[in-house]
Amino acid sequence: MILNIVLLLVGLALIVFGADWLVDGASAIARKAGISEFVIGLTIVGFGTSCPELVVSLTGALQGNADISVGNVVGSNIFNTLLILGLTAAIAPVAVTRSNSRRDIPIALLVTFLFASFSLTGHSITRVEGIAYLLIFVAYMVYCFKSDKGAEETGAEEKVKSLWLAILLVLAGLAGLIFGGRFFVNSATTIARAVGVSDKFIAITLLAGGTSFPELATCIVAAAKKKDQLALGNVLGSNVFNILLILGTSAVVTPLSTLALSWVDLGVMVLSAVLIWLWTYTGRRDRIDRWEAILMLLLFFGYYGWLFVKQ
Image (cartoon, rainbow, N blue to C red; front, side, top):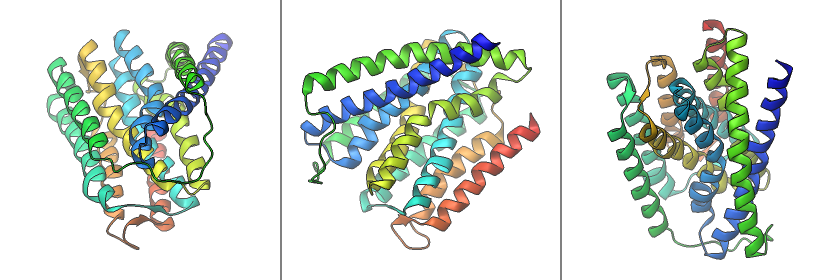
């Protein structure tokens, strides 16, 4: 048990540091290409911080554990939206641009609703559906880059100035994520089964929280530096990546059963996406205010309380 706990912590450390290196390297490469801050958050940073979820869910799929793959994504999206974006907006209100409210937020909501609907009706994600998810993902990424208006001049100093260093960070980050994900999934599953906790519960809580640490750190730092577009793009991008890329890839590897997910799990995930859209039209328009952030945090802790009571 002690060895598994140590491996769990080592895996989590590799995931967090690996994601951090990947984000730094990829962001440096993206900025040299003149990409806007929001699109960097939506795509490059969103992908980097979603890599832990990709590794964990894909590893779970390869091991035939659908509860880990699906539960990790649902839990991560709830964690990202209610806790991470809630904490970010509680620190400083998050501005929502016109393109955010008309394009990015509705797309994230549509993708979330699509996944929840398929999960409740079909109770599985087939290989065909997985391929469809990946095709939608590619189309969305192409659309984001083509519709981007270019980078804003912020005057901020680049953290990584050398292109070769940026490439090295990306490779080191990927290596950390791959090995860390393997340690993390194997140890978490062993510990969960040893204490009699279900795979779904451990995936929605421990795995989802652990693999969402990169998003949490990125968004809190972004809020402190008044980079709210980067924070919002990170959350929206991560949620879209989790469903389309991660579940799509995992389902192509092996069809995924969603029977372990309850209507409460999926309902909270959909509600969290609806709230982001709703907050753009309530209170002070075009931003997520502190009182709205507090409501998101209360919903998050209420849901986790329900999970512990049910468990």
